[in-house]
Image 1 (tube, rainbow over the protein chains, first blue to last red):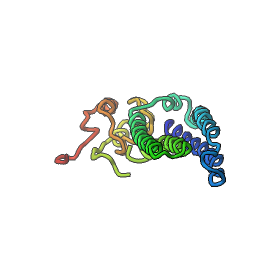
Image 2 (tube, helix red, strand yellow):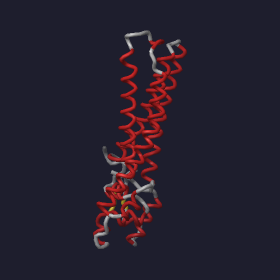
Image 3 (cartoon, rainbow over the protein chains, first blue to last red):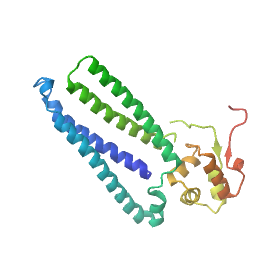
Image 4 (cartoon, rainbow over the protein chains, first blue to last red):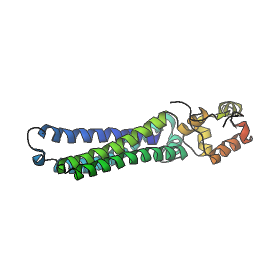
Length: 152
Length: 74
């Protein structure tokens, strides 16, 4: 597994945890109160901020852990060769994942606009955008991981 | 996932002929990661022209001795 593959995997796991935490804060409130009274703003802000911080921390920890493991297994030269050296295949895969993630985000934005036009509650618009942004990143990452393992 | 290209290569044999050069050594000399060198050798990834020429230069052979494309296919 390459350096960028590890980083992408760690990022995907982290974002899944953050989304699950957000879901646990908000979903239990649904059905017990009107959506206009559901307290989602705080958890959403926390999820976004913590998600960004956690993804950075995870990337650093994965990098350090991988460097230590590679040093023990194959020596310092292997670390110098593998780390931070984004080659042309990494760039191709990155662009592919980002492009597909971008398409998903575009669809999410259009759906959110449609919710606004149909005068849905702010709750649905905000959560539609939140989940759409998460799906965009997650699908982009999954595409990258498949590309690393498959035809790239 | 299927192979994205009909291009084949002789990298495995060329490495063998070059005193069993490791994939790590080849990767280092052409400036890519070992995973990319492996993907190229297995035909899962078609490298840029620049990397293809670098591979040929490493083995000191013409490009067509490293990569082949079936004639008559488009």
